[in-house]
Length: 232
Picture 1: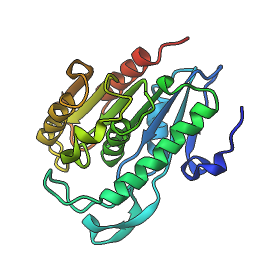
Picture 2: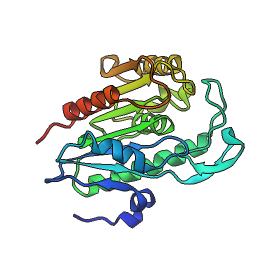
Picture 3: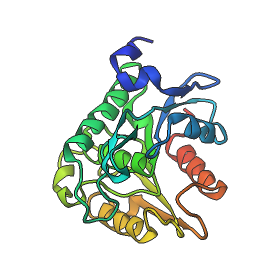
Picture 4: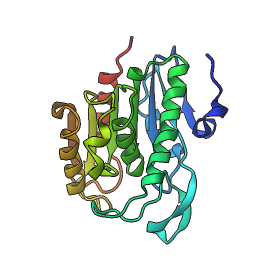
């Protein structure tokens, strides 16, 4: 194993769940606004597979316009939560480079990119989708929970150099989500189908679920991970 975590700022602080046997795959999971990697590391513990390493980084603390400029963990600034809201393009692109650096680090350490799944919840899911669609590294899969596609008007052009046109995407959303309405999730799924192979986009909704996760959703995530990252 080579490569130093310190050279990748998000990795040196991230919560990492090592495999309990030889690691042959990696899941990188990004939390939502105001949260940390700890909660999702706990969720991953409930569905972990022994040959997979799980990395749950913490977002940097920045002032967030949506929350009256209060400083909190956030992957990029959020101005509003509707499809027409202005977006922090520079911040989104900067955050994307930081996530790509984690992927590059794992590849240097011997895990091929097609044995890496990138996922996240809410703002973290949004960043996962954007990173995968603008990355040349071909991933094993992408998981987006209760999220949207940032800078959606820049697609499909923004994905012209993407290595993930045929990468499976699992998108899940609570039908009672008061923050990111399920209709926004459905619009995102339809948009994704114009960017990647439509048969590779799975959109699942959960009755009664608000802006959070549930056991049925986590079991769908586990199934997706097992399918895209089988034991080798």
